[in-house]
Length: 565
Image 1 (cartoon, rainbow, N blue to C red):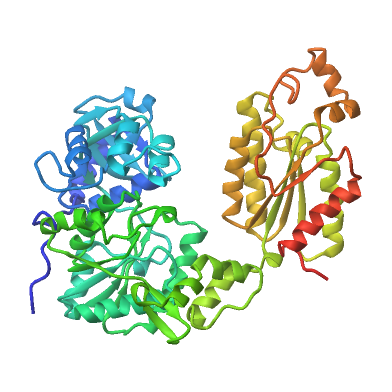
Image 2: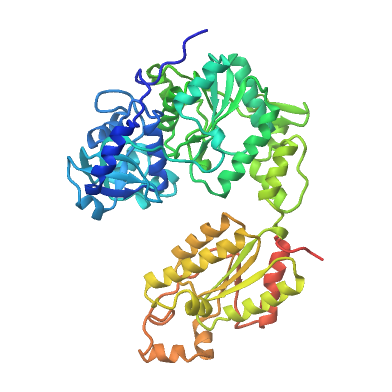
């Protein structure tokens, strides 16, 4: 039997210290600055500690970081494509200097590791985004994370591990590089091809991965990247478990990779190759779009593949380009896209269309996926008539939001089927946000609270009817993203003009605002940013409340959120 593939850099590191050293560090940590790791930071730390990021022995120093961005190599010349950094807020960084130590803790305060500070710096994040991603457009998820979520100061240095971060779910599917290498040795697997899946495996992906491993005469490691343990994570892993029995049992293994994607294109592929080599894989399948944002998938048949091939000699692992398969109605089976006929390519339907069909209770063809996977999909992609949803009314004070909302609620309760909850602006102000004022910051906090409560209602299959003013587009967008992960989100702009709202002035607020008694009043002394593309726009100046409520109901029926009788 051939010896196992060599770890990248020649040695598989284990940064966890002895029990004696751990005891000494815990005692000394009373004087250390503490840092509670954020989710991505904890994933990076886990892969540093278990050797998946070998030969790195800690978070990158400034010299390594700048070399990686400039040349895709560490300061010593070793090829490394993606920065592995620890970012801190300014207040914490101000209390540190080179030579200090930081106690790295999880969200519960457990000390997982200690880092010796070797460098501190504030990066030029726009320039770094262009170097890493080729753009600083925040629509790119990696750029958005770097510009809007990353904290301003980076700190680098060697790490000593005291305790490995834990996983509370699917524990049998996680393994360290040393553990996975031991399994390969036990099974007699000399050749192992890693298959990275970003979504559930359906029949096309199943056939593709099975054919590729057979052509390589290699065993197959289904090795999906997972990061945040949210609803989508549990759903995906259940789907992987469901499809696993269809693979040959003696030559297939499922193992989860706790890694936070950066979506850095070729750099991402090289990085994943290093990690898979450290886990003991000899090959890695590379499909079109690998390492790119979902909205910008591109073929690797051109210059990108050439760039990747230029670094192939740096790794012992081999990259294997594979072509996606498409279902051919004429041949009644899957064929490579390049060999499909024009009719097959024209009739091809993206996976997202099948998920849409689930939501509107349309049939799914049997060739698309396996019954066991379909059963898992139906748990998540429930028909819209059985999903939770949020109706989010927004508009000026006096526009008619609350009145329409109550009329809609009455109709929903008449129909029955799902619990309905009203989150009116005044009610929420009284019970959840009584301490808040009306500054932009406080308004956003109030709307964010409404959004969080609505997301929990939606996640649990109920209907949340929200009726705040919500004057700012950015916070409405944030709430949409928060809720859309769990069910439907319908933005209803009650577009009643200011002069009509002011003429009504049922609470006397406009008069007080005009007199300067009420400050920061939306529409008078504070702006209202109208939605650009709401699902519905209703002007109550020209229609009755019953007509407005009926418009909402017709929309819900048309979009299958309620059953059509």
